[in-house]
Image 1 (cartoon, helix red, strand yellow):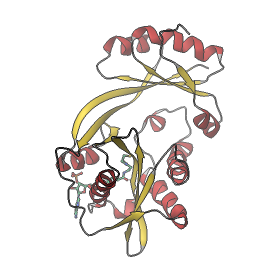
Image 2 (cartoon, rainbow, N blue to C red; image 1 turned 90 degrees about the vertical axis):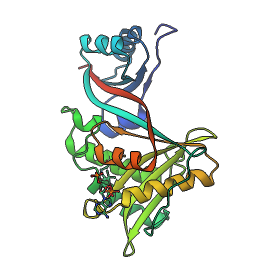
Image 3 (cartoon, protein in one colour; image 1 turned 60 degrees about the horizontal axis):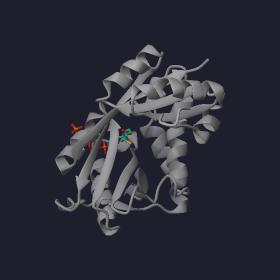
Length: 245
Ligand SMILES: CC(C)(COP(=O)(O)OP(=O)(O)OC[C@H]1O[C@@H](n2cnc3c(N)ncnc32)[C@H](O)[C@@H]1OP(=O)(O)O)[C@@H](O)C(=O)NCCC(=O)NCCS
């Protein structure tokens, strides 16, 4: 790769999960595209996943002409805890997960993410059931791997776990709400809103100044909740897939 091109990284977990070699790269300029493809070919990559800023039209066009397919468009929002109070969380029982909750968290993820709208599900070459399962493993792994999450919160209704939130410190001042799921049977009752409010409270207790969240641009429910609570949009981008065989 040329020294100035964006680095491509083999994605060990994705590769193992799908049983094929997957790599990822954040494309910052059109000149990144061909070196990323060449690197992928040289390293036996079968699926190259790239992301780029939504404003980077030249890079987008370069990827289009090189056979990349658009898989999703994401938006990022942030809440500034320095300038706004954390909203009241309401009465719902929300607490940090316990090891005994993992099978319930798996059930919630299986229900919430079945046929999801993310970039994996948009790729018709990937097995649907595996794409569903990816979120189940992500949620369960978040309960034990610090690289994925620093905290997992669960929401209970009548003593049963019906929702979860995974939270990660990105820097000393910024944290991210990474993965949220509400069981299909419990959706539409404000549980997600409550989880976001509890997540903000977790950020406040940890001394964070900003909480970030992201999702697909067509995940309208979550954005309505974020906007009502005082989050503001600050970034957007696209995810592309390029198959090499
Ligand atoms: C997206 C998701 C988390 C939302 O969870 P939820 O608990 O249903 O969300 P809420 O109830 O807080 O809000 C959803 C809607 O219900 C409405 N609502 C909230 N409280 C309500 C109540 N008491 N009665 C009726 N409706 C209510 C909200 O106003 C919102 O409506 P809107 O979409 O028209 O604005 C859930 O559908 C899910 O798990 N989806 C799949 C995974 C996903 O998208 N995760 C987020 C990205 S990682």
